[in-house]
Amino acid sequence: MDIAPWEAFIRGTALHAFIYAHEPWLWPTMQTLHYLGASLLLGTIGLFDLRALGMAKAIPPGAIHRLIPWGIAGYVWNLMLGTVFFFGHPDQYFYNNAFRFKLTLMALAGINIAVFYGTHAFAEVSALPAGADAPRRVKVIAGISLAAWIGVLMCGRLITFFRPPFFH
Image (cartoon, rainbow, N blue to C red; front, side, top):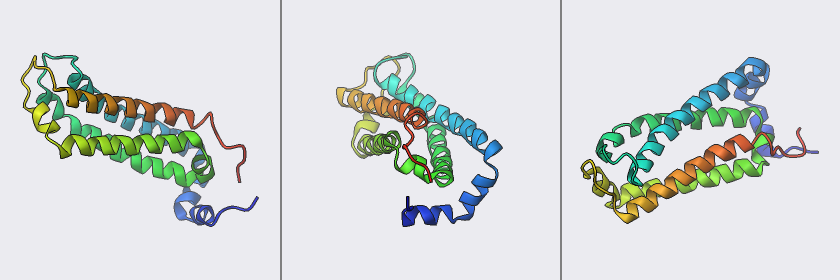
């Protein structure tokens, strides 16, 4: 089977060569770091979403929102590591439906974040005192966020199990 030009380009990069040369120890190390980034992301974003959905009402949402930069750091960290994974085995990812669905859910989560911060939803929820209930539209946004990020986590795990039937 001939490889596509984009794949030949990726396989010709120094990053691909480095990963290929150091794969026995590099890959599990990167996966461990990827899980830590996912923990930061889901731990902070998930906690905020659960508060918006009505759990832990004793905590003001604004206090939880101060943790969001840690979630953003986890996202950026995982985006960088995900790029390294892709460069290591582009065929395992590009032709993998679990990976494609993961990217789709990440895009949905990104649009959802833009809606949250681009509308008055953020101002409404950040001003809530402890014990207050979030408005319905904030709950919908939080529910979509939580579902999308859990789906991203699940699809990331399924990538290993739904490998394409061929490798170059």
